[in-house]
Length: 225
Ligand code: 5GP
Ligand code: 5GP
Ligand code: 5GP
Image 1 (cartoon, protein in one colour):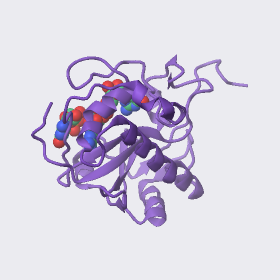
Image 2: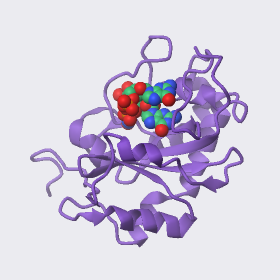
Image 3: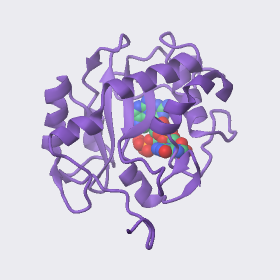
Image 4: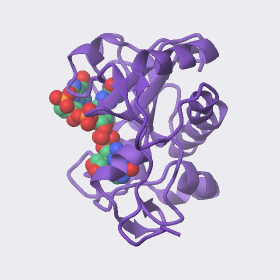
């Protein structure tokens, strides 16, 4: 627990592309941990809402608040659909235990969102609302950037499509040439702002000039009707 960390500067809504994440882990561990079958998502899903600093670093694990799923039970439909875990593993919590994806995100990032959020319910509700308001899958789709295992798209075109729609610059991260995550950023009052882009130039997750949006690939013999 790092109570000494200073207040964050802005929020990044981090969205993951399941087609990329699921290339590595094609498991379906439970209804809420699915990379294949009818529950496999075909749109960007939520990774997290992250408090960040303007210098590219970020606070984490800001105070002890053990995740309690009961506090967000009324949000379950939305969370299952738009914030699924695509991994079978249990992520670590801030104090060395094992938890759920949601628990990990709340404890690591959510606790650092104070003074904007003080509890799980408001943190998860706001994240779902932002996700539903800013539909990146749709923005890319309208610009012709659709899931494909054969197409490569210019990274600049994808960034421009988002800039044209929202008038801000996102942060894009890749795994090899596949888009892994796109982040859009907000001031503390949830007005859109540019993300801090400088770190992506040096990141091992920086994207090449042409990128892909891989489609979820069924395992052999699965879903091949
Ligand atoms: P990775 O090393 O895979 O890029 O990131 C590992 C973890 O570090 C992420 O899941 C996330 O919790 C945290 N992280 C990575 N980049 C950022 C960032 O820009 N802001 C914040 N707040 N956390 C990040
Ligand atoms: P990477 O080398 O992948 O950028 O970072 C390795 C790990 O260090 C990440 O998984 C992330 O959790 C952590 N890390 C990097 N920068 C920061 C930071 O500014 N704040 C915090 N809390 N963790 C960081
Ligand atoms: P972060 O990268 O936010 O620090 O950590 C994410 C943690 O949650 C990792 O331990 C990862 O294995 C776990 N996890 C569970 N489900 C997912 C998922 O769908 N996407 C990502 N990125 N991580 C997940």
